[in-house]
Image 1 (cartoon, rainbow, N blue to C red):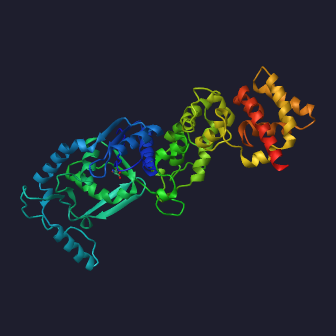
Image 2: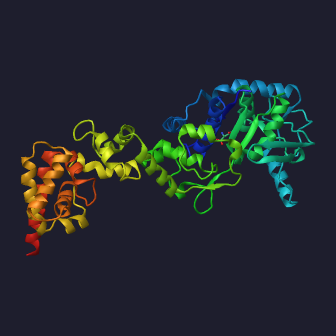
Image 3: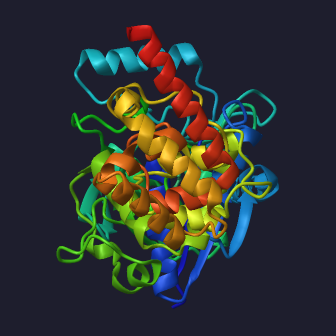
Length: 471
Ligand code: GLU
C-alpha cells in the first residue's frame, strides 16, 4: 500500500502552531513511507473562509518547508461531486430529506435536556416523504444498531454505540454540503490511507466511518493528535503568546527550529532534543506520539532557535536575517559590511534573528543614543586619553583588518601602561553605543574606518560635555 496523507485546514485564520504540528506529522509520515502528502483547503464554510487565510496557510507551509505533492485542492470547487454522492445516498435510501422546523428541533432539544438526555435528532423524517422542492436539509441515515470501532494509531481502539449517533445533516437547506460529508468524499476520492488530525475530530470519526461504509469504501487508518496546552494547562491560544506560525517568523525564529520544536511536542526519541529533518523522517513514528496533551514551552523553543542560529551556515542565517535588517531601515546589500561576516561575528550572541538584527544595526548606521549604563561607566574623563591615542593610531592604520586592528589597540594600551580593556571598552561603547559586542578587532573591522573615527569624535565630545556639565 502506498501511503497517502493529507493536511486539511479550514481557512478561517492564520496557520496555528497546532495545525503546523499536525501538518508536520502528516508530512513526516508520508516522507518516511515514501508516500504522498496532499494539501486540501476545506473552505466550504463560505462565511468564515477567506482568501487571506488561504494565503497565510500557504505561506506558512512554504516557510516551514512542508512541501505538498498534490493540491492545494479546494472543496468549494468540488460541490458537483458532493452533490452527486448525496444524490446517490438519497437514491439508495441511505439519506433522507428532513423539513423539521427550527421550532420543532428546539422543542425536542429542550425536552431531551429536561429529561437529562443527550440532545439528538429523533429521526422524525426518516420515513416521511418530504418534497424535494420544499425547503429541507438532507440527513444521513445512520445505522441504529451495532458499534463502530475507531482503531486509532495514537488512542488505540475507541468504540462508539451507533445508538448514540444521530442522523447528521449532510446538506444544509442552502444546498451546501457539511464537513463530515465533504471530508469523507475527499478522503475516499483522493485515496487517503492515513488521516492524521487533531483529536477534536475524534468524535466525528465514527460518523465518518459510517458514511464511508455507506459509500462502499474502506475507512483509512486514523491518528488523532492530542492538543497543545499553554503553560497554565489551558488549550494554547493567543493569550499565551504567539500562536501563528508567521508570527514566529516575524519574531526571528528559524523554520528549522520551529519544526524541531513542534516534532518534540508529544513525541520523543530517548532524550534527544535536536533533530535534523532527515533524522525526523527516519525516527518519527505516528504510533509513538503521546496520548496526553503536551505543553508549549517558549523557553525551550528559544533554546532550540539559539542552537540553530549557532550551528547553521552563516550564509543561510544571513539570508534569513536580511529582512529583519530591512525592518530597521537597513539594506545590507547596499553598503556597510558583508552580512555574512556580521553573522559570523554575532552567531553566538543572539537567541533570535530580531535580536541579532538589533545588536548588528550599528555596523550599518549611526546608533541614536548610547546605552546609558555603558556610557556612564566607560565614557568618563579617564577614557579621553585612550580614545584620543586610539584615534591617532587608527587614523594612521591602512590595513583595516582584525589582526592589525587588534595590534593597534594593544599598542595604545601598552603605550599608556593600561590593560587592554581600559582602551577597548571605551572604544567599544564609542563605536557601538553598547557595552557588549564581538571582539574589539572584529567590531572595528566591521564598523569600518570612517565610521570608527567619526564615532570616536562623537564619544570625545560626549566626554567633554559631561565634564563641562558636572563642573
Ligand atoms: N478542516 C478541519 C479543521 O481544520 C480538519 C478536518 C480533518 O482533518 O479531517 O479542523
